[in-house]
Image 1 (cartoon, rainbow, N blue to C red):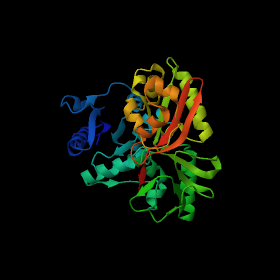
Image 2 (tube, one colour; image 1 turned 90 degrees about the vertical axis):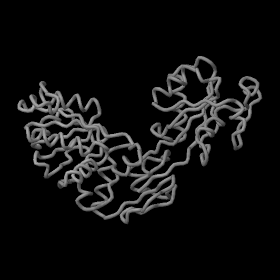
Image 3 (cartoon, helix red, strand yellow; image 1 turned 120 degrees about the horizontal axis):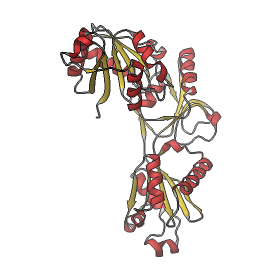
Image 4 (cartoon, rainbow, N blue to C red; image 1 turned 180 degrees about the vertical axis):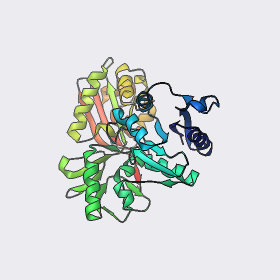
Length: 351
């Protein structure tokens, strides 16, 4: 598991000593980089001196995606991060600890960003108290944004998190429908509804949402594998427009895309390569013989077979990429020298 990158900043000699201790005790889980604004510490070499204003330093850490741990007063942290705070889905975790190491407070991105989890890890290592103020934690209830972050689910709209959490606090339960498999113990406040739900639910976990009124919060798994075929020279822009149109017609989310696949003679196809890079997903190619052996019923084309050695590229490639347990969701769609099929790989969520 990748270590969490945390920038730790101190303001007194005692705080710098605590920072050094944290670096040692959290070495297995955290990659700590120590900074300091205390001039007395500089001679001892504990931490990198911070010469610029704190809000500038904090902005650099936000841009780098690092979690922040301030060892000092909450007010210092608040003033430092204020210009950089955006929303709960993009903010980095920010924590505050007192220089005596008695309390650890997650200040920002407690759930989705993981600050509450980090506070728990640190407080256990220090024998400190984690001060949690998020309502679901205070009331010992299921936190839907923690569930989303833990399972690497994209969130269609962060407004839905607040609505669902309010419903949970008010009524003591929420309804959820999951298109994949569920692992672990289902919390008592989560009432699972068979997928697809026959009436609106609070939380829908699926790559597809037929109607925006189907749920209050749509959580999206990364599970869709594209099979793409095309004539030489198709541009990234042309391919992307085709893909987007197909997804919209199928009511599938762009955020659910997990990979792109094709036949190996298309391994150097610039447009597909650029699309995969833009989506930050892998591009997988298979020999024609491997595609021809894929299990399933596919749309056959003698012309394609003559050109690349397999009777169908997009459907077979999508199914191969989806792996065991995968299924074809969208059959071959063709448009002006481009073909696309979409398969869903087997996936699950863990409670």
